[in-house]
Length: 289
Image 1: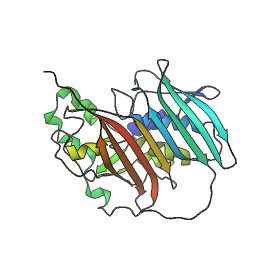
Image 2: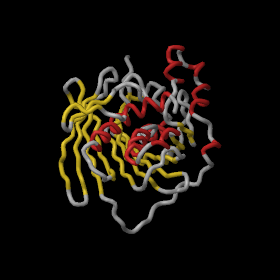
Image 3: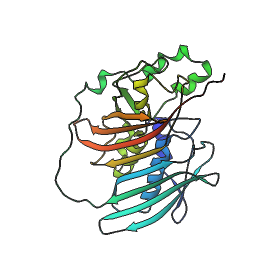
Image 4: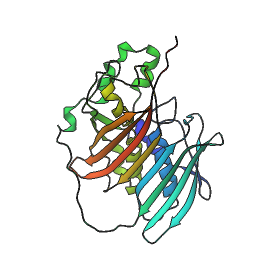
């Protein structure tokens, strides 16, 4: 297990403070200047799981309310909304500085049987065909201030291979389809719940940038003021995140200072494991005259 993988596993191991009250570490995730959105959602789901017996999450719906401060812990308060015969519902509020930074509802379902169908996975080259994200980042080091090199090249827990890579400093206008392979080797030691938590964390990676692609924008161009506004996720099949998964994303709409993005996550053998949807802020940065 790498140090980055160990840190992520530790981030999902919340401290119990009281009945239905938990504390999570804020620092150490995908970013250092703020708390990565996928981290807060995954920790909120981890808090909900502490109050649920046996059943697995089948859906979650979260709203990002304020930016997270990585310098202090996050408090998670769980409301046991319902314990039904087939479904369990939980509401989780994430708090920093006495204010909500996220609220989330999650639903958990017994193991039922029923009819099955799914859309086919896009036909792409195997993950090894595409460069690792560390290889891509190395190409841009010389174009960035030296003070940013350490953060850019810091080891991350999720291994990523981008299928439709766009130059982050000089992005060309392109199709909104945004695909990448991803996995985490250390997940092979994880139980079913932790597998879901890791996939939840990873599901926030690159999703919001899908809506920027048709406009030739990226986080590095200085033209976009962006942030995730919400995050929804549905789990369809068991997760084994130590194996490659294809995250196939697109953005069917942008407008009014927002963009809408959606994603389908497939196992390498073509099983639709999860679906994701997210709306984000995509506001023009106002230039000083």
